[in-house]
Image (cartoon, rainbow, N blue to C red; front, side, top):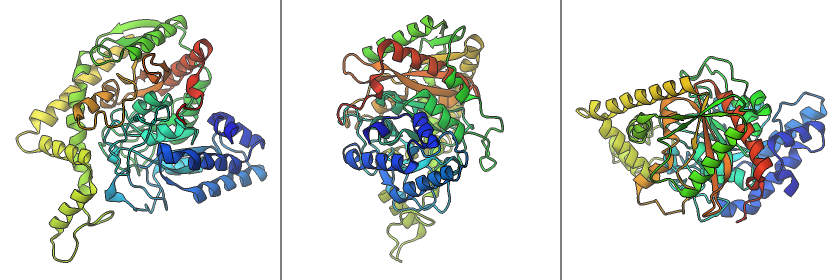
Length: 497
């Protein structure tokens, strides 16, 4: 079992296709791992044991019939509990949807099934993806496998923890302000936010519709690319879906190189609040890129300093609109409906019982920002800042091919450390938010351990819109050079388990 769960997704798929392993053997090994360690980690909210084994048996049957298998056929995956999955609970980490069984699959879920990826279950997350630590889940926090007393990132901490604890070789996350990349950084895994609109949002429970984006999570750059290719592509059911071919991400991951590329370093992505060990590992990564043949270009993007403020007006405003559908009348939780109360009272009682403190905070912020007399002062001004950020990116990409930065200012902080300080919590997404506001593609991959605490540090790579292949080209080159130069402790079993 230990050997199976430590394989990469690409290696696993090859062994299944060749008959060296069966999909059932692989699935059973990961289900056994979940049973052995997830009581401590709490990466999963629901494990679909029977469904996963049925999918695995179907893959084995295809191989026995001589049918050609896809590049990830039979490979297990942990799915963030924000994508609807027919017949499987989807809670979005909230009590307001506890026990809800969707009658349909999200487009992303359909594409995973069509590719014969084995879905193990649904992973823990901050409620409605609102958070940076997975402490806002209504079902309790997830632990970071490197140190179970620390956060695994958020909002997709369940997906990143499942990877880092070898409970799954692949996972799916969503990224509204950094919720794929930030968990990847603090758990030593790879996470990619594709270009906005590159992966369908149909069937993904909405938080902030102009920012939300699903994407791949894995332990290697190639594995992430293989998953990216499965889930990306135009979807007529999503009005924001981009009708263009998927960039050649797998080819880029197999042929990583930065020779002759111009790599930008933004001066706004360092300074006060950044952990010394994070900056040290980032500077080493920049020097490594130089050694690999890249030209390093210093960039000044002054509007990035305003990104955090703009985000925390735009995202709450959109969430206050999106979450209005949870009224206790159509689906999910219903409280106080004893026949004596009005529909308005039932809705109020349902939301009081079903939404957690962070969700209520953001709904109130957003409702205020959109209210009469404040719309232009707050939401309107934030959208103007968003335009300035996009213009800064456009100017930067006239000078460089990609931009690099630390993914997060610090390594994983202790569970509870920032629970009573929302502003400190929000600062965890300082480096990731500008990319969401502009719609660009971005990746986080491991760049070592911080010397002061021995915890993972993430390197962020940012590419222009629909140039997602550049992330994989640069990421694969950095990953290979890192392994050759320093080894790869991030692929070893997390010490606390």
